[in-house]
Length: 497
Figure: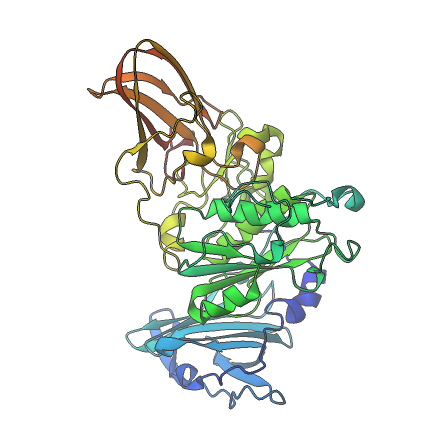
């Protein structure tokens, strides 16, 4: 964990959960947070009172909440963002006087944390046997301030001319000609919504391109990367606050962006909490910004860093640099390490299977699925391979989603007579180096009896090529998530999705 800078500390009270919309909001049901707290000190638990002030959301009144520590103290924090939802769900967050708090849940399950600074203990709250318990923890377990990536560099050189409409809205597609990026959605109607909030720099770029560092290209590439990294989930990655608001307090996540250089940071477990759960500083381009945003959203969903015990010590061990021979690195490690690997760089979620992993106790998918759910199989049976003009296989007509490590998608076709076949299977967007896609393609061609005709899963290359001369008959192209090396030195198909 990198050390929190003085600049971030100075800004913390103004940035961490900045300024959610309160006009017309329903009053926060503070009965949820009036539950008795218990103090966990070793095996001993002692009752401690929790007496927040009245929390009306009238425009002229400021809400506060008083939360206990394990030292018998009570800390009062102003709440900047509050929300209620159906099913008695409530959430509240805010910062004041150097302290930040996050609380959320239902009457039967309250959880959250209190942060008091980088060098002092933080406190986590959970519900055990109907009682809210407070336990001390390290500050880095509630707020993550991450190492910076490459500097933004030539701002003017990054201002893109945007001229064209997305050909569909597939995660990872780079074509965005004529599309109003303020209304991008990756999966309309999904249960969960991730809102990428560019806030005050989000202007009509056809009117004024000088208001923000973020070009249309950078904004689009960031959105496409995040959408691709979560494509196996029932998640809608959006740019439109109205879609986020309509999802309900319990179903949303908000990532916000700053028009300045710095170290991005995130609040752990901030899914379902109003306000900005992460702040993402500008990066050299939209792909770099996308990597940062994916990493910080991982923290918002509870993920810790993937480090390397083989380092002798210091900050470097917090971030695993990956395996160059496989061009693989975990998203929660040093995702910048793959910059030199080009479009075949593979960044994935991890469960700490690699040798010398620091985070062997956390399975990223298990952790994230506390908040978001995996999609159902989009292709439970074989589908016909769409061939145009008798010979052309177009990618926009032949695509699928690998949702789980044991999923496979099959495309069937028939040939007559001796027929040469050449097929290339790539991850969506991967052929153009879009950030986010995590699929390492494993492709197999089988005949009607199931016998393997051809197979490809090249090391360090994300696409697969099938070249064969076929005789009359029926065939199936079977696509799976690939694996290379071993889980200890390489990667399994755990996150080849």
